[in-house]
Amino acid sequence: MGLFTRWFAEAKPAIEPASVRDAARLAQIHAASFHRGWGEGEFESMLTERNTLVHRLKTGRHIAGFIISRIGADEAEILSVALDPQQRGRGLSRDLLLTHLGHLAGRGVRTVFLEVEENNQPARRLYERAGFATVGRRERYYQRPGGEQLSALLMRRDLS
Image 1 (cartoon, rainbow, N blue to C red):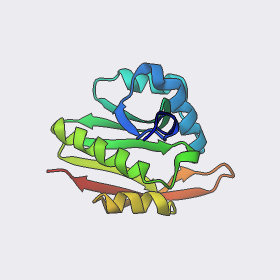
Image 2: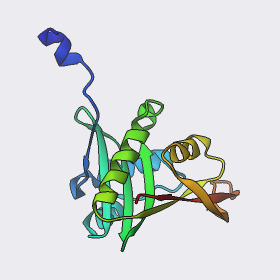
Image 3: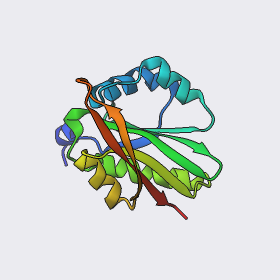
C-alpha cells in the first residue's frame, strides 16, 4: 500500500478508557442521541467516580461514541451507550459493548443490567445479540419531548 493510500485510509476504531478531558465530547454525543442529554459537568463527575467505568470509541483522532457503567460489588449497570449519529450502522456499538463487558468481567463483575426503551429496536437487537435477556419492564420510564411516556425493558446478562 502506498504512502498516499495509507495516509487517507480510514483508521481502525480504537476502544479505550475515557478521561475527564473527554467530558465535553461525550456530552455532545449524548445530547445528539437522547431527549435529555447529560451535561459536561455530569460526565466530569461520573468520570472521576471510582465505581464508574467509561470507554470511548475513537475513529482516527475523533471520539465517535462511548459506554458508561456503574459497578457495585459483583454487579454493574450500563448507564448509557451512545454513538455519533454519523457513525451508526457500522457495527461499532457491538464492538464497544463487547469490549466493555470484557473489562467489567476483568473487574470481577458477574452480572450486568441495563434499561432500554421498549420501542428502540436497534438497541434491543444489539443487547439481545450480546446475550442480554429481558427480565422486567418499567412502565412509563422514559418521557418524550411532547410528554408521551414510554416503557423500558430491564435486561440482564451474566458474565460468569
